[in-house]
Amino acid sequence: MSPRRARRADESPKGPIRPAGIDRVEEAADGDWVVRTVTGRSADRPYRCPGCDQSIRPGVPHIVSWPHWAGGEEERRHWHTACWRNRLNRGPGRTRY
Image (cartoon, rainbow, N blue to C red):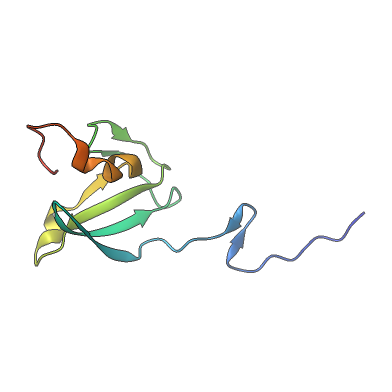
């Protein structure tokens, strides 16, 4: 029997654990946005994605974003990662959230 390899505290069986909950600012044609990546572990309730109007089930990794201005946190929205990346390609008549 081979010995078990000891894992570092920042590793999981699937590889290194990426930090979640770290905000970054993204600049795009539709303005500046504060974006946070949510891991599947920390997604504990369903949300409605404004990009596709479908449910984001608990346990599914996704993006949380809000406008980068004072009070923008009140307009925080949860998006599927792919919907967030493709938000600028949506057709006319759709709001940004």
